[in-house]
Image 1: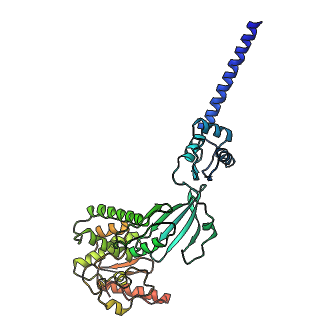
Image 2: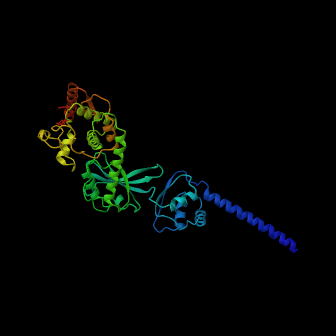
Image 3: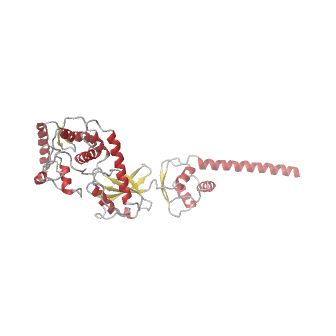
Length: 390
């Protein structure tokens, strides 16, 4: 009898072992296999959240099939206490193991909300965006001008794990950048002096709250220096610049003359051709810079007396290039200045469509100017006085 009992017990033990092994294999497959998500979701881990709370949140959002298996897998992986505060993008089909890795890796949030502090040529503005996991992109939630507009509730109530970016528009001046950074209350530190004009790269810079303003400016300068050095090496033969600095001056003029990327090589060709023929550049943006010193927009048209006034930046009066850049040009304008289009153009004027009409002769240019003035008259506007070739 005892032999039968022992045999039955052994059989039962083996059955239990097989069942446990099967259960463990199933649990492992559930933990490491593809998850149930049909589309990406944004999962937020609050400060102080327990593994139990996060696992229930994941289950309610459909990211995992079983909160208990997720907790067991986290314990077994020795990551149960490693959850990091923030908002994280969980991709479709992510396994529990992958989700645990995402939530414990640390670093900045990969979804949720972000703030873009955009420094433009007219003003700086704050843009709050939320990540739409279903669409896979950020959507604008609120926008305001600091110190002018009322701060939207969406911004005031935003989560404290915001991602921050400072973005420089092409054509901003160094004074505008410094003035705006000093007003950015999410940054810290003093700025001793305004960097040389043209030395800051228009680009998007990821920052964190409390970052040093001077360090951010140094990164902008380093990025622009790398761009200029790279493009200087690839410059076209025969461009009329004695140094990269002169190319940067030309690029800043191109930047301020057109907002259309496709036109920049043509605009650059006009100025290069004028220099080659000993003609004055006659470009309004340089005159404006001489009046404003880059400290904001002029806000009105140029007067004839201002076009005749001799300043180091009045290219209607001086020969050659002005002494410094008149703004911070972007990469495309620097590239255009160093590789202008091969044209015979000497003039250009607005064509009413947002672009310009180019001409190789004064007669042709005068016809383009007449057409532009008709457009302006039809709009009830006063034609600008500073037109190339006038």
